[in-house]
Image (cartoon, rainbow, N blue to C red; front, side, top):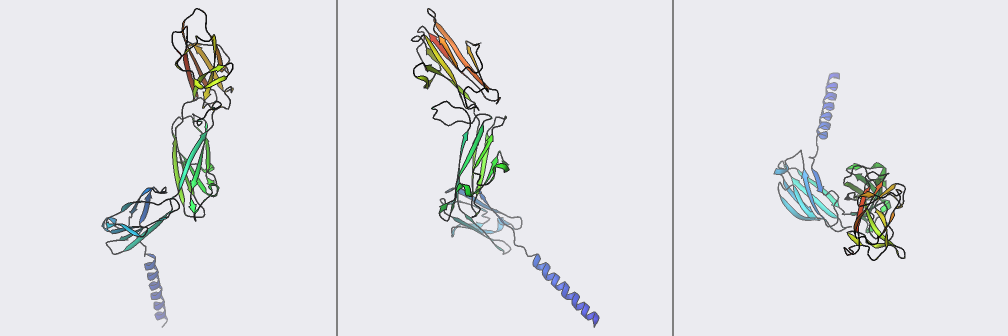
Length: 335
């Protein structure tokens, strides 16, 4: 009797173990659904594809359904292209797979297209009344600002209520990433090459993300020379280039103006000005931004006036410029 009880207990134990093992081994076939791009912009064409190591998708019957309507169906149809809706409009994607073994597998995803605008601004000197953008010169500071457009429940979310992940040349910038951090500031490196900036913006309250990227190429700084009139001041409306005829003047006062150097003042102690006439240096202090050239009586000809500017604090910042000064009417003014 005792042996019978032991045998019964052993049989029940092995039976339950077998059932548990059988239940544990029942695993649904894994199928991966991938979108390219992963975070589509509004009205963008998206490619969806599936892959699996657990079943032969090439032999399976695959049906793609977009917003409740069948768009594609057939054997081995592992991908589809479709267009998502406008911002704030969700697009539902379903894929139904019937394997050769009779297994039915379904994967679905809801796409809420969002977008991010990236704008950037750089430090650097530009003269008064300059109407353009301060361009990014080597080694200057650069700030990239993300302006997201993510809609939740018909309302566009505030930029400061979202989470930002910044990347620079493929590397995540942890110190710049986080909640509400919609701007990223860094200094250009000594290696002069294009910089790729990426940002992923996500909403903590909804499963919505947006992505944007831009490539910013550093430029060489520049120097332009302007005529400085005793009455009207610096004539920023026209830079001196080519040939300038001085016949109508007894002298001309010119000023060199740096563009995009990493300073806040044209007379910064970091800048060195080197003037020359016909290739010969003019002995001036390094911060001399202006020069006066006089016409000599009875002398005709021309002189090549040039100036170079160097930034001692940023070794990649260098620029040069010049013009030809013509006297006694040999050449007409060309500015």
